[in-house]
Image (cartoon, rainbow, N blue to C red):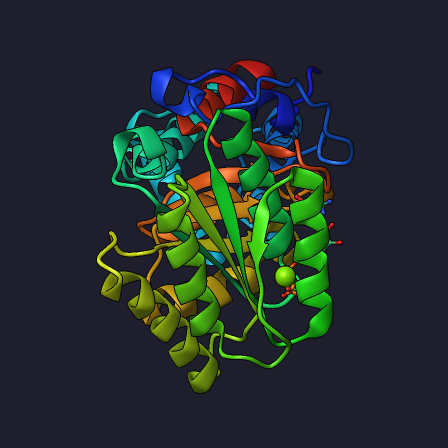
Length: 329
Ligand SMILES: Nc1nc2c(ncn2[C@@H]2O[C@H](COP(=O)(O)OP(=O)(O)OP(=O)(O)O)[C@@H](O)[C@H]2O)c(=O)[nH]1
Ligand SMILES: [Mg+2]
């Protein structure tokens, strides 16, 4: 059986706009070879189309983080079509499932259009991006990866250390800034994060910077004060006369459905312009991408595939779907 290697599938050129931010590495991702779709494929092959198989399929999808509601809706559609067309062949049923998976992934907002809004050459600069999410999901690491990506494509970048909650966060981002040779605007621990945002934007305007990346403290979606603080940071950007800040929600792929719950609350409170799914290299459950697509009307723009600066890839649903199908046959 050929294996579906997510990292390789997603690191492929997907058109001129995405290419601006693309690194073209082919990354062998360890630990996620045996993904949900390979399990599903072998279920079809080994069991045939009996009740037992449909039950196992439901379980396999849920355990793979596809999520209960997406799983049930997918299976309803596949079974209805299998009945309608009197399908007997497991392979044909598998094809129907794959077609339904494809519909979910390509029904999201037009990715190229959204990616364009993050492209300095197509927008009024500086573009300001706030990285938000719960504690430890990979916000700061993702910010550094994106800084690296922007710098590598010839853009001028500045970083705002608006996680003033703990001193270690300020040191962490300063160290990354030194490594990237990017200026970091920082205040002291405990200071007002909105003031950091303001100073970062002033510096960005004065220095004709293309992109200002703002690191924010991890926060639980249900903390009203902390969510208000995010709103305030976002308002500061609008008041400076720039385009509204782009909210980049970082989601940890290893937290599966819990992460999705948190994300949905973030979206309900502050909204977001794009999602980065971090730590996909540590997750054997690629199915979470389906849940993100079908539950939120916000696209996954990037995926995190490791801890180093190069480990960020543009997520390409078309490519993902196409290769998913060919690799599992
Ligand atoms: N394997 C892997 N690890 C990652 C990835 N992204 C981030 N990490 C690791 O996750 C841990 C937390 O990353 P941070 O970037 O500090 O997370 P954060 O959201 O800024 O954390 P707080 O500021 O404390 O809320 C670090 O050990 C990172 O190296 C990824 O894509 N893959
Ligand atoms: Mg952080």
